[in-house]
Length: 172
Image (cartoon, rainbow, N blue to C red; front, side):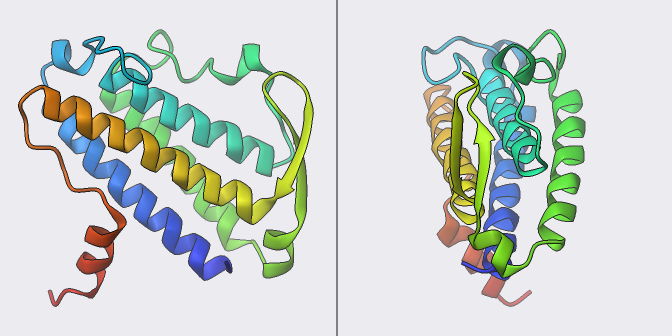
């Protein structure tokens, strides 16, 4: 994968995440926060987890590896109380990630990048593999959110990559 591929992967991820957020925004708060014993209990909890995980990885790519006790402070219902706040914080994160990606070259993408796990244990993976993991992680949790929305009796958004690609090539 090169930088263009990574940019497209995150463009897709952001597009699909936005569809999930828009669907969540149309739900009553009780449905948004209902514990359905999937993933991170609720739609809101799962969205918070997704954003928090993206933040942790961006921190790692920037040379900082947050410890477990600090990693989630910005991404809890206590510190991020509602969808508008989550959306604002996530937008800031997306902007920082776009800046990071714009400064990458192929050599850096292919290089091993050391980081610490939340446990504090050292780890290392190629940056491109870390970035693919982040996009895959979002896909997993969006699928869970789609399932939760469907359980509420509502038609969920179509967030598959195929729909994104077809949107990109469809005549306007």
